[in-house]
Image 1 (cartoon, rainbow, N blue to C red):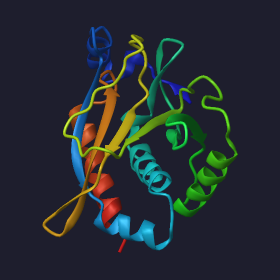
Image 2: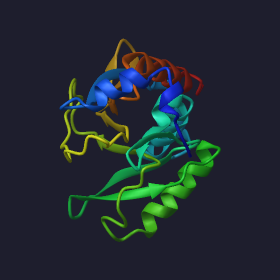
Image 3: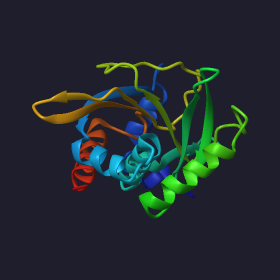
Length: 206
């Protein structure tokens, strides 16, 4: 992690303007074609949740804006961001938050996520770290919009990713995905780059 020198940062003015907004976080929802990716996951009997968390993290980590955070009230950038996702206990219908370090390959990540989830009995193990992406699936509805509870902390710059129920259209399998980001660091152009990277990555699974 390294701090950003605001005095020489091209984004300094945008950063300050959005940081002082009443609601500096915003959320965007779009659909992705998961046809190839879903086939790959099913053939290998991987958890879709673990696999998709890996895919999103891999693509988001390639965009510098998604790795920016506030550290001690100052803008900073992390080299690598890890993962934190919710996982439902079907018996109690309560979720637990599972933290898993990012891995080099989808195979390694899925294996580690499976082991971590199975061994974790607590719903919450520790306060939320700063160097993570948050994930929460919403597989019961194929939504077109989603909103989130807010802590009221303006310096919460952790991106939050959600995804909804799959649906079929024109022979393809589609799924809504949402990303909530802090406008001090992430603009629409960055979300556009992320969406393009993610779709290309999902398409590469033949």
